[in-house]
Amino acid sequence: MYQSEKVELQAKIAVILGRVSSKPQEDGYSIDGQINKGRDYCARKGLKVIQEYTFHESSTRGCRPKFFEMIKFIEKQKEPVALICDKVDRLQRSFKEAPIIERLRKSGKLEIHLMTEQQILHQNSTSQELMLYNFFVMMAQNYTDNLSDNINRSHTEMIRQGRVFTKLRVGYKRSESNNKDIIIDDSYAFLIRKLFVEYSTGLYSIDEMCEKAKDWGLINRKTGKPFDRSNIAKILADEFYIGIEIVNKGKKNEVRYNHIYPHLISDELFEKCRKVREGKGHNHSNKSKDMSYNLFKGMIKCKNCGCTVTPEPPKKGKYIYLRPKPKNGCNCKQINETVANKLVEDTLKSMTIPEDVLEMYLDKLKQRFETQQHNEILQQKLKKQDSDNAKKRLERLLDLYLAEDIDIETYKTKKAEIDKEIDLLENQIANFDNNIEEVHISQKYLLEV
Image: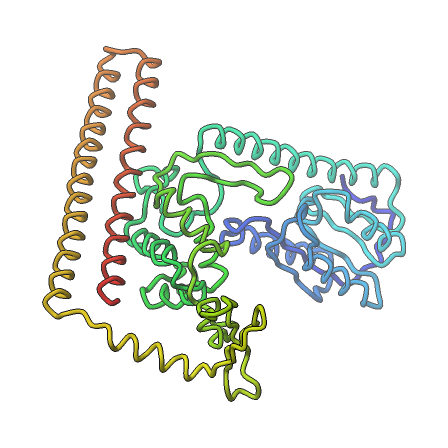
């Protein structure tokens, strides 16, 4: 709809708006196309461009900071401003901004020029012109609503199939042959397994695991920087690694379901880490609080009355005393921790293990670990053979279908059964990797002791 020639427009200066709502649009030609089109329009209309706003921002979600930055700029001008838009959905896709735009339009501060719709809204626009503009906004909102409905239907179907639509977890990647498939990323998966295994021992805090991950070379591929504490904590609490996806976590519409992709760790290992996180494991790391004076807490009792001798924090950082709570008139006295330490040290020094016995024990320990590791590797090889055989059966099934020896329904049913079998075998193989890693770590700690 063209603007009536009888109406004399007031704006002599212009602001050009170029907006995209998605990253692919931003990386393409869309914004440049909008701005160049706006510049040509202003040249034809004799408008002086005083500002150009280009941004990647949704018009239906969030508070639209760039949009309101533009509105404030227009409000500061001392004369009417023509806002140049390619079309109405670049400015708004809902009516939530309508009161702001209407206030500026009615005051004569703002003219809205829609190039594609060939419409200009100004202070004296007729009811028919306003109705047409509102119709354009309504159509833009309807497009967004339909898009949202389609996305929700797509997400519902993906949940039914056990597929995910959230961002990839560390340790996984898209398959090169089929972008919809998610597979284990071997270059990162072993580091994630190692992260879980080491943390499950209860010997390290999240901060210490963060440092370990940094030393191992576990970095964020997008930023090229090591993961910070919150990232490591999120990884260690993510149930995706044991086959569970959670959508809208912590919200009323939270959905939990089993995904179809390979598991990176075993349920048992994840449970161990959960207990450590919740303080049910034996986490010996405590950097945040000095508990050194509790060395003998709950360990010493009076041999006469049986009362517990309790360590007390040092006064002025000098001495630590172990104070009893006498029972039945017992005259047991406090003892300096240094004295207690000396008594324990002398006792431990008197306890020695003969060298030949120690060497024999270490040999037996190594043999036990080697046998366990050998069994794990053997079982893993057998599972890999089963997995390879299942994949060959899948190929033969496809050949039968292509040769029209079986119908489509039979093919789908059999394929689903074999796919499930392969997924189970792949998860078992991954669990063997976890078990072997746990054997290595256990052996290392025991030998150090």
